[in-house]
Amino acid sequence: MTNEEIKQKLIDKFGELVYHFEEPYGMLTFETETNNNLKVMTFLNDDSDLEFTYLNDLTAVHYPDNKGKELAVVYMLQNIKKSIRIRLKVFTDIEKPDVFTASNLFSTANWLEREAYDFFGVNFVGHPNLIRIMNVDEMDYHPLRKEYALEEQTRTDKDDDMFGR
Amino acid sequence: MKQNIQLPEGSLEKQTTTLNLGPTHPATHGVFQNILEMDGERIIDAVPTIGFIHRAFEKIAERRAYYQITPLTDRLNYCSSPINNMGWHMTVEKLIGAKLPKRVEYLRVITMELSRIADHLVCNSVIGVDTGAFTGFIYVFEFREKIYEIFEEVCGSRLTTNIGRIGGFERNFSDLAFQRINAFLKEFPKAMKEFETLFNRNRIFMERTMGVGGIDADRALNYGFTGPNLRAAGIDYDVRVAHPYSSYEDFDFTVPIGTTGDVYDRYLVRNEEIWQSLSIIQQAMDKIKDLDPTVFHADIPDFYLPEKADVYSKMEALIYHFKIVMGETEVPVGEVYHSVEGGNGELGFYLLSDGGRTPYRLHFRRPCFIYYQAYPEIVKGMMLSDAVITMSSLNLIAGEIDA
Image (cartoon, rainbow over all chains, first blue to last red; front, top):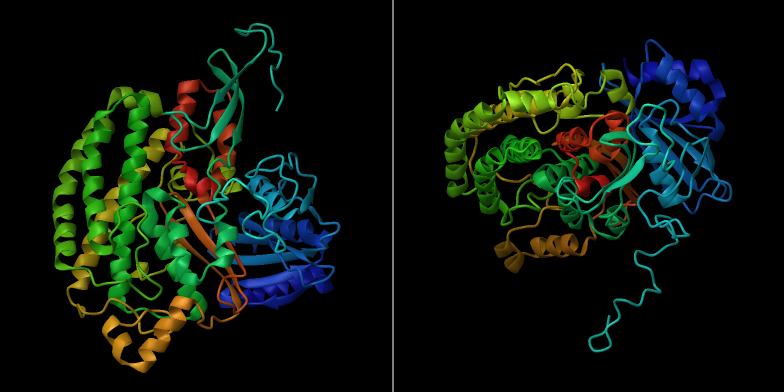
């Protein structure tokens, strides 16, 4: 099954709602509307020809320059039997980053969405346990966003009066 | 998670006890925590907590040039760091479109398979230690030491190797390295057979591990399992066969599959993978004999440092050296995903480049992080000692869970 056939099936089913088809380095990549992500993934999961039943990866990217669409959630799905991968992106506004959760469809998404929430602040609607996973619970910002520097500027435990920082 | 759950009539206790199988514990091999609700010796519920060794690799990588990220990848699955290093180099080579000579690819295969043997030796012997059998662990670590000596000859370090460069290796494999590899190939099968006679048909080991910690193939796929844990559950998915890289299609090897996915199946799958890796290394050593022995890197002067003698005498070499070390080489804009078959499954690198000197976003698809989510479901209803064996058979490595 080639990337062209997958693209055609998606366009036949969703029409205008899937767009920006690209093939960087051989992997079909496309975008869809923010509230359409579950419908597309369910279609890819249930269709008997496509059979993208495996969620490989789920991550988020922050584009501070795209006003209104700063946070992107990137899903990578895989067809285990035919060894084909595709990538789906949804963009959401940073002021109200609500995305429907995929954890009812794929159990893999549970912790992956917690990680995206912890580092980027994407709010997954319907997630059973959306709390921070790797950072301390008291942290009140989302560190992987571009506005935060690598190291916290206000930390004092590494200041050395004799030799400088 | 609900604490001190009221238990039904007929249970040993009235309420569950909370037990903290904490981050520092000799049985959890690595820093991760499990908060267990127990009824006597049985586990009613488990909540894993991670993040004790989170080192912010994805944020650090946004500030480092491409060749400086390799030491970060070492520390993901630190039992088999060469595989992580090679995976990263292949991702960058895919981004820039570099093609490698066959000898380099075969040397990479040898390095990756040696580290896969090292990783599986740790996992299998540690399953033995958790059931109480310490001898296998001590015996097999002598051969892990021999693998470390091979890595030390090639790159200088033993555990976190930083082996290879973008485009090949930093120096040619010396004669001593090949001697050590050949000696390993000769001595290791005998030791491996002794290790197998200790465990494979040992009655106590079989009764402790069969039927324990099993997972269905469908649940395993839904949870995103890959690697030996998925193959023990019965699904035939190996990244080396499904999406071949580094000339793996030239090699002849079988992929072992289990049936029930319990601890015994995982042990046997890893055991057989060690034999298959030995066979791949032998094939690669035979294939290298016919190739030009002076080739150890691709011809990509934009990314691979030139010879020092040239840097001191030729102008172009000086300019390339300066640009590479400063990280000012032009990298194409693009997004690439590349995955390798790590010791625990599909280790993926999702790299977004905007043409600058550092990645715009680098995400590691870490297999241990993804399949550790399934631990509460596997462990529910089990005794505590079985839960400890299940944890060690899943080969959870804290560095890969947290990154």
